[in-house]
Length: 238
Image (cartoon, rainbow, N blue to C red):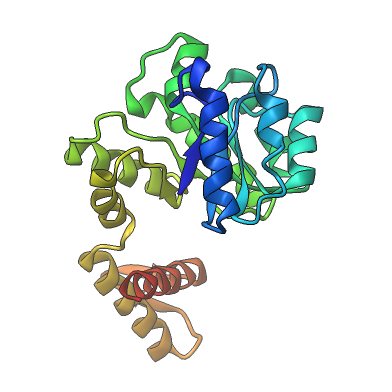
């Protein structure tokens, strides 16, 4: 869970919101906290939450490769929210920063910064860039942006499946109604599981020699990907 101190809170209520967050974390209830950006008046006070025992880490909005980001990462693990042009350009350096544990994309703010359409597929190149940056830095795959239409399960599913195809492994949600659609989109389908089982079986039967399945060669990367699919399906079953 991410407790929000940024866009979800009116400016005049942010001090009170911080107090609520402090109470939550101080009771030992675990959460990430999305703080305000470094160029705002609330940034310094948000960082005073760092000693709270329930704090899992900070989500830093509009993250760029800057001293302020490194400062936050020195305090707690950071999910860097990439939602500006500068953040996209800096993504590879951000991913290599000590203390950064995950990249995430924020398409709503990124659309505003770039003055482009907020259509979901417009940001596929950015998703792929974050996946590349994360992999090169040995981070877990990035987190995809929210879908504002929390009542539109089809839109949520389509967005999550696109993100998964581009190397992202999870998705931010803004409402509990979105969770089922997100989980289903990232869960391997029955067809994917069955094909993965056949690939692994064909490889095992070949005993390390070249194998073929459905008129195509079964190469080592295909086998490893199939094994990964089966492992992921087991995680969902657990």
